[in-house]
Length: 469
Ligand code: URP
Ligand code: ZN
Ligand code: ZN
Image 1: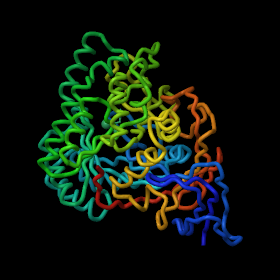
Image 2: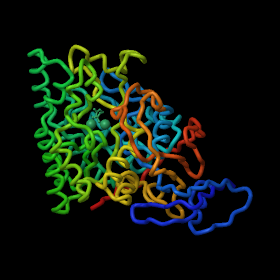
Image 3: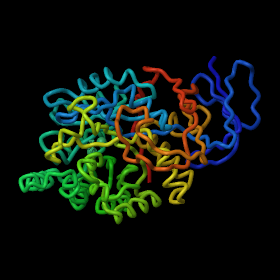
Image 4: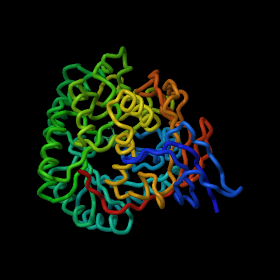
């Protein structure tokens, strides 16, 4: 029987904070207590002086993903290894339906790629072609395949955008099986006009990506989608919320008791629009959607995290290299002469926990319990993984991070395990670093040593989605 003892750590969950030992056996937490005595067969790790937290749960990643003419650069091996070094032990990635095909084919294709994962993984299904058959197949996804969340886009016309009728139908069907509908909310039609006008007028640099995606259009789409979800009576989850107008709609709906949820991402919390004034083409690194917003939006996001109008911080890890190292299909250079051709997306999997710990907990914007809640517990609850994932409790999977709250280090993309060639946080000096990571009781990260292996991640068939107020 495989057994691990983590001794003398400061165990922090979304609600607890105490010193104790954790005994893990056969992948699960068997006992939590003081001065646990164990036999010689047990592997012992001393966690004195360290925080012992549940492994991170990142519910928004795009690994090995075709996006229009581009493809993200991280495979499931490199992406999940990077995630592990960043303290994340479970992620939920996006599978997608392709036009004219069943979402069941989409999940099969995703499994083919995801079987190499080194941490535990689940899948949301992106719906593109909402036919009667596709709707019927959603039932199978929820009941048989453990895919209980779906993603819809109100942006990227001609690529991913669906209309309001498709949104309504998908939501109604999701509601029959305990599903959650995740939405990328921006008004794609209006943005498309602004983008085409900018390019035609010769405004082709990366900063025009930000200037053609006004916050009011995120607000409009968020409000519209909430109305549709209210009518469909289904829980809804807004991905990468960045604008105060959108947050206002979320907050009003939650005050009325409507099950509306939202995540934001580290880049919206810590970066400002000055990133788009970088010289040359450098600012293409910050071309993600939605773009980085003004500081007034950032302040609203911090308030939203504190008062629970925002419940999750995920990465939206969607890595496209800056240079052509891995070929044009995966690089930002595609948009050198036209910002609308820059693949939208940025990396973040490896830095989520330390960046938010340093900027959130240490700068006293978040309590330690709230940090765990946002990074692990609530994402697990919302997406049908709790209490197997997202907490430290007897019977839960022994997915555990030992975190040194005092270690100082500097973010360097060159030292990362992702294949991406840049970091949004390059050169940032952080205090707080992941020391060890355990996946189902097995130590997979020990300092800079990788002890995990390709394919050891398990697919998580998820239960019904939760609602968190
Ligand atoms: O820029 C982004 N966020 N790319 C990934 C696709 C999406 O919109 O989530
Ligand atoms: Zn999106
Ligand atoms: Zn995304």
